[in-house]
Image (cartoon, rainbow, N blue to C red; front, top):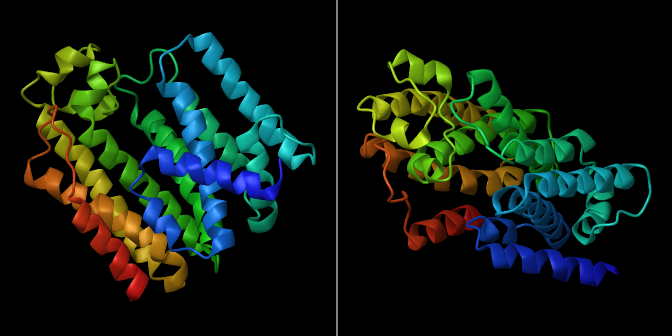
Length: 281
C-alpha cells in the first residue's frame, strides 16, 4: 500500500466515524493531521472489535492480531493489517511509544465479553488510562513541540474525558450489561448488587454519579494547569477536545448527573465556535 492510499484509507475511516474531533484534527499541519488520522483510525478499529456483536473468542483473536501487528511495526517488519501499515510512518516520524499503542488494545479487550460491572477504583483507573490516556499520550507527540508536561495533560485530560463519557452513558451502558461506576463509590452510597438494570433504579445513584463527577472535575482542573506548561500552539487540538467535553460536563452538572436515556449533547454551532476560536487566536 503506497503513502497516498494509506492517507486516503485513514482519512475516510475518520470521516465515516462522524467524530466531533475531526475538525480539531483538521487544523493540524498536513503531516501531523494525517498522523492523527492514522492513530484515530487504529483506535476506531480496535474499539469496534470490542463493541460490535460477535463471539468473544473471535474478538480476542482479532485483538491479538493487532498486538502482533504493533510488534511487527517496532521490529521493522511489515504489519499484516492495513490500518497498522498506515501507522508505520507515524510511529517513525513522531516517536510513538509501543506501550501506548498496546495499552489501547488492552483497554478495548476489557470490554470484550461481559465487560466491566462496578469495577474497583483501581481497575476503573486502569481502564481510563488504557482507552483514553494512552490515546492522549500518542496524540500529544503528534501535536508538535512536545514537552514532558504534555504527558500530564494527556493523563489528566484522558481521565476527565473518559469519566465524563462514563457518567453521560450510565443508562445506555446498563442496557448492554455494563456499569462502569466504581464499587467503592457505589458501596459508600449503600448501592449493592451487580445487575446493571437494577442498579439504575437505586435512589442514591445520582449522588454516586456526582461523587465520580468530582473526581473528573479534579482531572479537568489538573489538565488545565498542565496545559499552561506546554507551548500554546501545540495544545490547540487538546484545548478544543477539553472545551467540548467540559461543556458536556457542565451540562451534566446542571442536570444533577441523573442517569437517563437522553444523551447529553452540545449544539453543533457551539462545537464550531470552539474550533474557530482556537484556530484564530
